[in-house]
Image (tube, rainbow, N blue to C red):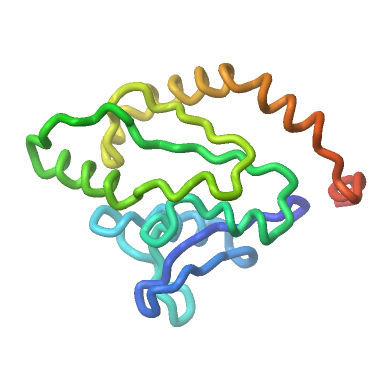
Length: 163
């Protein structure tokens, strides 16, 4: 691939983070989307893979180690959610939110915070709302993104031109 890709998963056998950077992309994306209890894990060699969120909700360290020049993280937690969960889905959503504990921020140059209305991790019917909130946050932060890019001076300016 011309642009490096690293997809973070967790092996349920060893309990370790597994970074997929080669092999079938569809399989890696499927593994990274395998939310325990919602979607089945993915077998990959001798590993049983699930979403990397289980172990690391913001794998910015993977990007930093790979030499990323700019890291933009996205915090998907809703900050004002103090209501009591009313059903099993709301309980699972709240548990996932609490488990995430957002460890973000350690290596990120910018953190986007798009969620302005409550959306549980399993509320797939709110996908359009999420897209709209993300677009608004992106537009709000565009000047900061431009500032980061203007400061960026990669050591090898031709890094991706020949790929």
